[in-house]
Picture 1 (cartoon, rainbow, N blue to C red):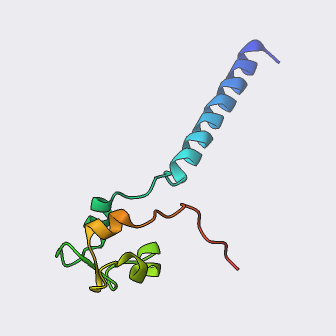
Picture 2 (picture 1 turned 180 degrees about the vertical axis):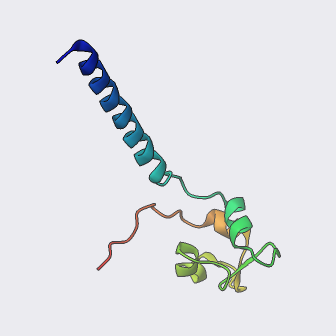
Length: 95
């Protein structure tokens, strides 16, 4: 095998490996921390009244709604959400 053929083969393998790694990295979801309280309200407060009702929330806020709603008015304020315990970031195991 000539040096030129070997160089072409190695270059092709390197380009293929880099291309595959690039595609793998772009297809994996970005790892993010928990959303800020402002981001939560921006995303979930559909009627933009500055409060979250049980019908507007989902996930841990929905599951722990009555616990987080410390004044028991049926809505979550930014202050109540700030004081709420943060989720661990671990997803529950599927059964």
